[in-house]
Length: 195
Image (cartoon, rainbow, N blue to C red; front, side, top):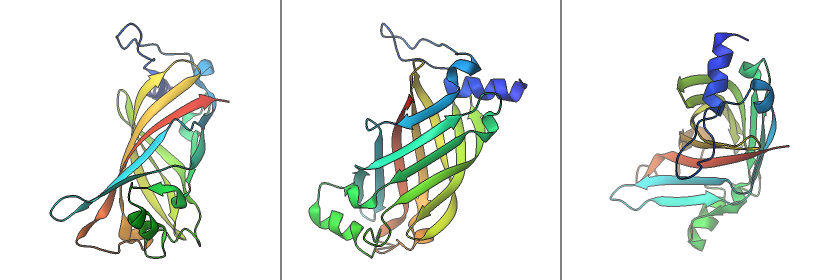
């Protein structure tokens, strides 16, 4: 096992669920950590779009699924695959939800899935990484990167905070600019269960 593999293993698995009010640290063996994990419904996929003068749009997606496969001895080729359904967008305002689902933004009747598949992982800190891959939305595929921070691990369940900034114009969704920002900020809590 190379030093790079050991460091990456520690990056992904250096934290456990808090016990007795403290964050215990437990690094499992590569054999323990390796495997396939399914993203659980307890995950949260939230986003926001800024607006000139404040306000903006904040929402989340209710339907999503995905897996990540951590490969023993070959973590560089581990894989993350994720899909969400744009018709499940929820902002708390029916009018805005309908507009986001329309052809002006997601066009969810024609493009019912937004997907991401990883291609590269780069360690950025002791418990963080940047994942780069292909995001496909509204019939367009682009390279995008997301910052990942490990937040929990207990041998069966794992959790990451994932953040990223996507330019709407790259996917023909930039209606309303410049009043509404061209940037969508994602803040996701991804939980996975070994399966």
